[in-house]
View 1: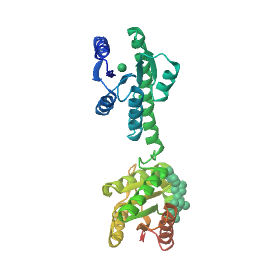
View 2: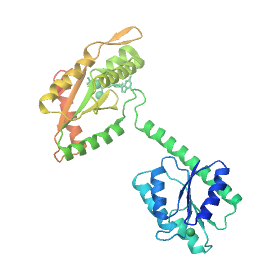
View 3: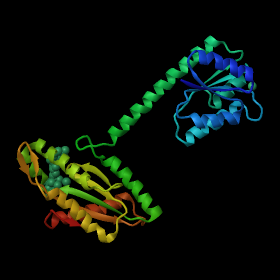
Length: 303
Ligand code: GH3
Ligand code: MG
Ligand code: MG
Ligand code: MG
């Protein structure tokens, strides 16, 4: 465990350092508010706790912690507990310390036993928080992934589409948004069973991924529909790129339990050039193109 000790009084700082070092803590030091901020920023990746004096010349402990909390929020850094160590027992000071972003406030002279106990309590909260951040990451991953194929689900796809559209508006590089809908998929399920259908969906997702360029995006929009975003595309490339997708899907059948399942897909494409339209109307244009592909014989790209 790594602790930052901030105190302008050398003897206070050294005594504390001696005590904590004996207990096995790694200690770094600062002797004023600005140095505290600098040390904090330098070590924020592996710092576990800050022990902060209050009364210091120029910048006091409250100001330093306010600045630290603001920098943490701006940079979306992990929370690191702060305990104030102050000579003042005024209740207003205790209140100010917590308001400034401190997690606890101890009054000097500091009892070593109380300090150790408080540090343990902070560590417990820090551990709990770390576990929460971890499990939130797992949940976020689950909430944005299609469990069958492992690609982004509709929600996540739409978030990424929104982001790509923003980039297009900002930098002017066009994107193509396409909807793939497998042809006569009901027949696949009827002939080869739902397992057969699922195997096809997994295989199709993998085939699309196998030719996806870096930065391009795939999502499962629902059922047997996939969405694709091809970034940084020129109008004259659109047909060739999506014909390639169509052929990677229809070139050879999916093999499931020794049986061959032939598949084809219809693809509707819309180009986004940075005009005022939103993602709903862009998807609607792709969907209209897809409808036309279905209506005019399937197994084709309409752009
Ligand atoms: P079209 O060429 O007009 O698209 O015909 P289609 O049969 O593919 O069209 P439709 O959208 O009517 O049928 C899609 C079928 O996809 C219906 C549903 O049973 C099947 N489906 C949807 N989700 C899944 C899934 O997760 N697994 C499997 N195996 N089938 C699914
Ligand atoms: Mg002081
Ligand atoms: Mg469909
Ligand atoms: Mg279909």
